[in-house]
Image 1: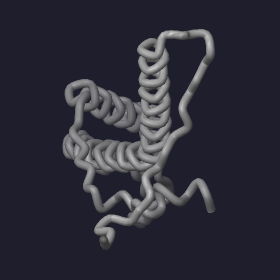
Image 2: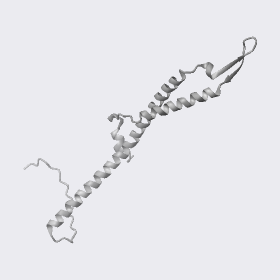
Image 3: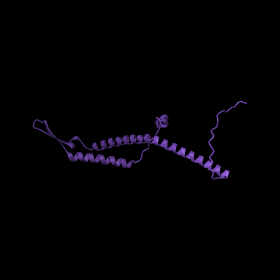
Image 4: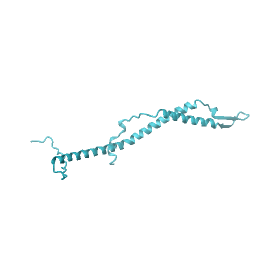
Length: 151
């Protein structure tokens, strides 16, 4: 008769601990041992996958926060600067021939602008404290994830 399925089965060795003379107790102990081994392997696999995924998620969060910070700071700086003109920040001194002899910066106004821009940016960050970040599966290079640790 021809064999349809010729692969040999994996036979795990029987665990005989010797202290249990009852066969039923020995079978229960073997099952518990197998379940424990499977759970340990599952937990180790989960820890490895999480350790490979965390740097990707961290990088995406950093990129998203930089993008958000740039947008907010540019918008708030434009809003604050729209209230001031160049003449507010700099005093121009001219001579008798109408030539510019000196430019004197008005430090008080400049410091006021700097502090109000920083204050407005901080208020915007406090108002919008949560952001959603989408993660596409193509970001994961599965070959890299599973074979990185062995190379």
